[in-house]
Amino acid sequence: MQGSPRTGGNTASLVEPFADELSTGGAECALVRLYEKNIRPCTACRSCQFVSAGFGCPIGDDVQEIFDLILSSGMIVFATPIYSWYCTAPMKALLDRLVYGMNKYYGDTKGPSLWEGKAAALITTCGYRPEKGADAFETGMIRYFRHSRLTYLGMLCERDPGYGRVFMDSEKDHRARTFAQKLLVPDSS
Image 1 (spheres, rainbow, N blue to C red):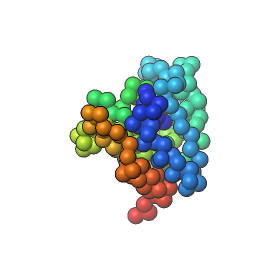
Image 2 (cartoon, rainbow, N blue to C red):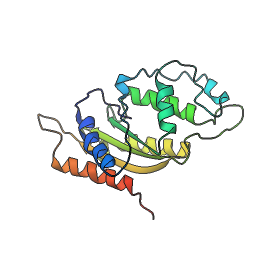
Image 3 (tube, rainbow, N blue to C red):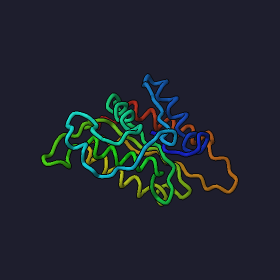
Image 4 (cartoon, helix red, strand yellow):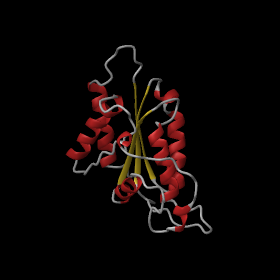
């Protein structure tokens, strides 16, 4: 899930070698550019809570397609630039819709997490140092993943201080590929 508005922006530049390395390692990758999808915000109607085995959302947009893709995947990578210490608007709208549609916890009885046990990771880009720019997002996502019973595998965050510098370089390419390799062979400890 790529939440960047720019097709050739920093986040896309970081995702490219990451996805290439996953593919080289034998993983099948599907890139979903959220800005190209119709993702409406959640209205908290809770209709999805009465459909225990599926998405169940009455909003007719592209989130059902994304839901189906996630259910057929073993790992979900959420890639987003950080704007004002959090993800972009389409990413946030998707996260809100998925937390209800995937987790059947909010109805009259507590149901299952449909994506329980799936692996999840983050790729972020930001203007501040990662510990000051992406930390709030990571903390929120760790809670989100725990709540959804997903297995968090970590975050790759790269900084772009701006001011006319070229974002992507060989070091960032190497770190993106190394992160992908880590996800291909999760730590067994």
